Length: 186
Image (cartoon, rainbow, N blue to C red; front, side):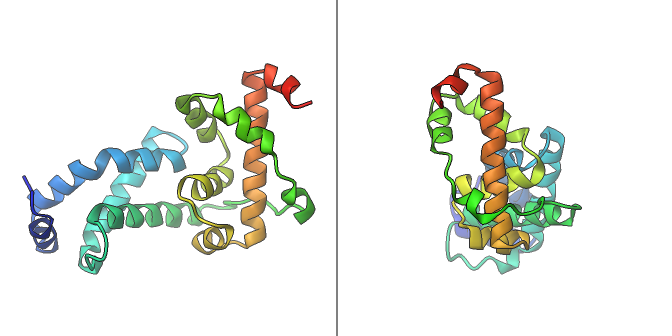
């Protein structure tokens, strides 16, 4: 329906339902996939998507066309997800000693190369919320620990700790599912 993105933006800012519906349908699938990475289940992902899209439509006047509309909507939805996760009690667990965090688990990277993306997604979804959130922000969104800390309102040390714990948890899950990995790392 909308070939001209400028017309879409104008109609969105005017509150036209047809434009809102068109944007929702266009962005729904990629946003839902993003929401799944942060949600504990499909229903929570749907809730994240719904709340995030509502927020984007409510704040459409803040869009300044300095980048793609889809990218802006994605950032609004992600920020809405992170805001919801921050409201939860104890998003992240206590920090670990920095010397343990600095030890890189490079074998995990090799293990992940041999696991299907669907299986990896399933294992990541099983991580505790704090681990999963930091893992996704770091590896999927490409944020550094300083940015993650700012987004989640935690310390950089907590971000590093959560990522380290997520990697250890994933490694244990991989070894449990694929016992042969345990012997490759000795």
